[in-house]
Image (cartoon, rainbow, N blue to C red):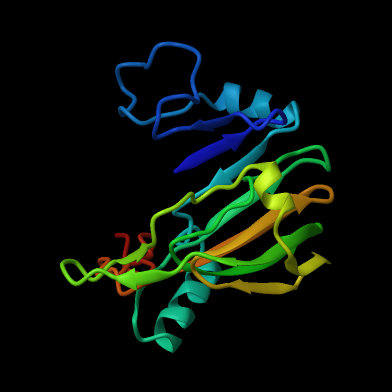
Length: 205
């Protein structure tokens, strides 16, 4: 998956067909993006979010695998890369997530605000999925201004932040950064990821 947040906060998404300006080539799948367009957006100061990235490398996969092993109720841990080119780039508005998240800071600094507001959640008996109570996932700037932060700090390379499901938060890039979000898909009956890496260069005759 691929998403882009422009400096004016407009959101573009590969899955929604908004990351291309030209007609889809016949050889491309229905969900696609134009590399030149995404590159231009990046150069204009847009943030890029690469989702479903836990299998990009054995090292990233090992992080998710370790969390799956530690938290037995977790069926699949993914990794989402949040990339921003400068301090003018935007990220998501103040919001809460359906999953518990570990945020690993790989490059650059991020100003985090985590608030005392939390939406309650429950496990649905019909499918075992975590469901947040009714209400907005994202908040306006005015609604956020009414909240009291319990964490208001800048995190740097190597820092780790844990945010439970339903807790409202906002990340503001301080400069060029890459943050890795590792959501724990707990009690959602997700199909486990195949974390085995297959070496196709072996046994070549």
